[in-house]
Amino acid sequence: MQEESDLVTGEAVVLDLRVAKLASRGLAMLLDVLVQGVLLLIVVITVAVTSSDLDPALSVALLLSVFVLIVVGYPVLFETLSRGRSLGKMAVGLRVVRLDGGPIRFRHALTRALAGFFVDFWALGFLGAVAVIVSLSSSNGRRVGDYLAGTLVIRERVPATAQAYVMMPPGLEGWAAQLDLSRLPDELALASRQFLNRFHDLRPDAAHALGNGLADQTAHAIGVAVPYGMPAWVFLSAVLAERRNRDQARLAQQVYAGPPPAQPSYAAPGQPYPAGQSYQPEPSTVVQQPAPQYQATGPQQIEPQQYPATGPQQFQQQGAVQQQPVPAVPAMVPPPQFQPTQQQPVPQAQPVPVPPAEPSPRFPPDQPPAPPEPENPFTPPS
Image 1 (spheres, rainbow, N blue to C red):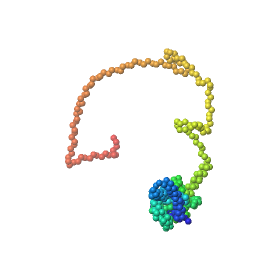
Image 2: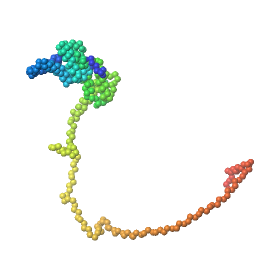
Image 3: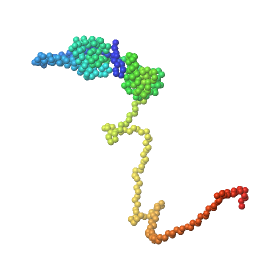
């Protein structure tokens, strides 16, 4: 039975990782020890053959340095270059990752190798006894080097699962047909399909968190909010089923329509056509009209006319306009000369006598003027 990890990332997402236990890790470690032993044996034989004249103490120091370099450098080199896999882990299908699921780097590999040499296996590990005890005590099968480096060994080879056919939820056909799925990325659609395939294998809390995240990303991509009360797996199923139906309809239309007509290739302006190719125009459906037939005698010859040397002659033919003599222009008459006139003196204005003003009538202060008599409207006109 394969167990899952209880790791949570910084975004509060539970990681669904199949951790490697003691048996698989022990097999990978045994294969790595065999490879290291072969390398160490080759180095010992080489040093023994080439250093016969060296001091024994120097030979021992050299062998010890080579032993530490192989035991520590071998896992550091392979796990750094292959992102967490040594030769033994490659054969078994294991990988070392960080606690957040990311690949390890040089510092992680160096910390694990040094802790393995000094604590877990060789120096103070009693040939791996410390690593076995700590791994059995850990729920994720981690040893001392994993705790110090913050790493975890997981299984990469998982049994293949059958791809389930995504069905359209009943009653959502009309709603899904109105969605704009042109902006849905292929990576997001693939992740949603994998989530639906593994939905029943996930724990309820992990499936709920992962499904809500994928549903929010999908809704943001297509510009439609998740309907209230609709589960994430129902929303994703409707979107993926509608996307598959549209792709199948588009593919069927292309198959039945046949290949598109070939377009003629034209050369760039100023560039000759490629060798062996020439421009072949498409056959035209316009009915070609026969060209007019011309006589073989060529254009009509116009006989040149003879003109007298003295000037233009007067044509007597019918319809010709006779030339009229040009009338002589009379000589220019000089304009009349105007004599300046003498300026007449301006007569002086005579003063106009003003008659004296008549005195206004005086009325006594106690007798007001008599009002005028009203006219009699019945008086006959005179």
